[in-house]
Image (cartoon, rainbow, N blue to C red):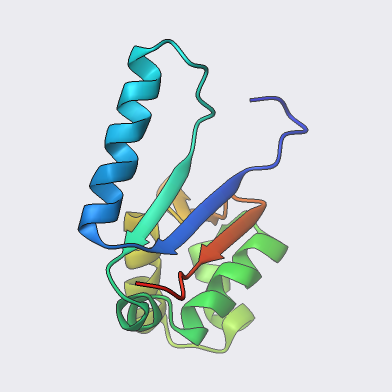
Length: 123
C-alpha cells in the first residue's frame, strides 16, 4: 500500500452462507493466480446485530478519534463528554473489531480513511 492509498474498511450485513461463498470465490481466484486486492471487512448476520454493535455513541467515538487522533485514552472523557468506564468498554469492543487501534498502552487511532457500510435490501 502506498502513502496516498485510501484505507477502507467494509462493514456489511451478510449471511454465513454468502460469506462462505465469497471466501470460496476468493480462494479459487487466488489458486488461478489472479491478482487480488487486500480487503478488510467486518460482517454481521443482520441489520439489527450491526445496529446493536455500532451504536450512535460508538459511531461518534469513531468519528472523534479519527478527527482528533491519535489521542491518549485519558483525553477521551473530556472530548466526548462521556464517563471513563463506558468509554473503555466501547474502545475494547471497537478495538476487537479492528475499527479503532489501541497501541502503546494508552494511545488510540482510527486507521481507516473510510468505512463502507453495505446492507443488502434483498435476501
